[in-house]
Amino acid sequence: MYIKSIKLHNFRNYKKLSVSFSKKINIIYGRNAQGKTNLLESIYVLGFTKSHRSFIDNSLITDNEDYLTIEGVVNDKIDSKYNVYIDSKQKKLKCNNDFIKKISDYIALVNVIIFTPDDLEIVKGSPQIRRKYLNLELSQLYSNYYVILNEYNKILKMRNDYLKKLNKGISKDLNYLDIITGYLIDKLVNICKIRKKYIDKINEYCSKIYKDISDLDNFKVIYKPNIDLDYNDSNIKEVLKDEYHKKQNLDIKLCMTNFGPHKDDYEFYLENKNLKLYGSQGQQRLAVLAFKLSEIEIIKKYRESTPILLLDDIFSELDGVKKNNLLKYISKDIQTIITTTDLNNLDKKLTSKSKLFRIKDGNIKKIKEVTEDEQ
Ligand SMILES: Nc1ncnc2c1ncn2[C@@H]1O[C@H](COP(=O)(O)OP(=O)(O)O)[C@@H](O)[C@H]1O
Ligand SMILES: [Mg+2]
Image 1 (cartoon, helix red, strand yellow):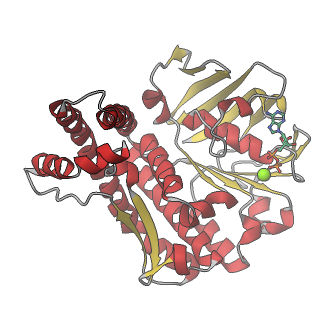
Image 2 (spheres, rainbow, N blue to C red):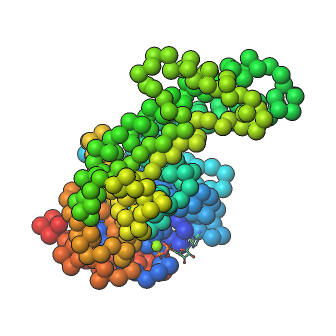
Image 3 (spheres, helix red, strand yellow):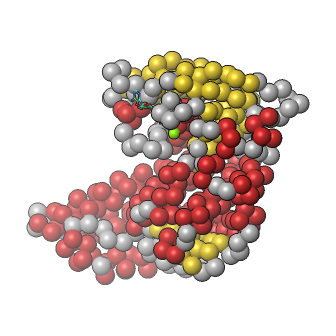
C-alpha cells in the first residue's frame, strides 16, 4: 500500500498542510525543529490512531487550538480515504466517510512501519517498551489481537482490584478469585500463542537480513514468556489454573497478579550474546533494523501488501556500506518517506529518483517531482 496524500489541520506545528507523495521514495529535508518528525508522526497516527513518541494525544494538537484533523488517501489496490479527529475529549475515526467505532477495526487497515533513532530503546530499554512495541505491531497485523489484549487488560485490572479487597479483608470469597482467574487464563493462552508464533516468524527472516546488512551471523530474537506454556498439552488451562492457585497467596499479599503475559519480554541475540548487555551501539541499531525489516516481510506475506515505511533521520547514524545494504532492502517496491537534515547523508542515486521536499517552519515546498521513468 502507499499513501497518496495527507492533509493536516492543527497537527503540532502545522496549522494547515497538504502534501502529495510519490508512491516510491520521498525525501523531506530541513533543519532541526522544522516539522520533519511531526509530518511522519501524522502518517503514523493516521495508521495507529496514536503517536509513536507521545502517550498524550493532546500534545499532538497545535498549541492553543482545540482539535486536530488528519485526512489521508491510501491506495491498497484501491483508494480509500481515512480521517482522524482528536480533541481533548474524544477521538473519531472514519474510513471512506463511515465512522469506525472500534479502534481494533481501524488499526489494521493502514500498515505503517517507522524507523527512528529512538528505536534503540527497543533493545536497550525496559521490557515495558518492548511489550508496547510488540502489542502495536501485532494489532496492525491482526485486529483480533487488539481485542483480546484489551479484554485481558480489563480482566487483569478486575483481578488486581479483587486481590486488594481480599488483602484488606473486604472480600473473602476465593471461589470468585478462581472464576476471574479462569477468564484471565482464557485470554492469556491466546496472547502468548500469538506472540510466540510471531517471534517464530520473525526468526525466519531476521538472521539473513542481519547478515545481509552487516555480514554478521547468527542473529535471533528470543521470546521470554513470563509463563512458559506447552501448547501441545490439551490440559493447558487446567495446568495454569493450578499454577495460579498455588501462587495466589503471593498475589493477595502483593495485591497484584504477579504472573502472566503482562510481564513478558523478548531479547536480541548475536552469536548467543545478549545484545542488550553485550552489544555495541552499532550492533543494537542493526538488531532493530533487522527486527523491523522482518516485520515488513511478515506484513507483505500476511496482508499481501507492503506497509508504508517512514525513516526518520536514521541515515546519519549508519556507515556507508550499511546504508547501501539497507537501501537495497527498502527501496525495491515499498513506498518510503525519508527525513534528513542534510541531503549529503543520502546517496546521490537515491536522491535522483526521489520526490524531494523542503520543510521550513511548518511550511513544505516541493523541490523536485519524479516521473514514472525516474523512479
Ligand atoms: N503541539 C504543538 N503545537 C505547536 N508546535 C509544536 C507542537 N508540538 C511540537 N511543536 C513544534 O514542532 C517543532 C519540532 O518539530 P519536529 O518535527 O520534531 O522537528 P524536526 O524537523 O527536527 O523533526 C518544534 O518547533 C516544536 O515546538
Ligand atoms: Mg526530527
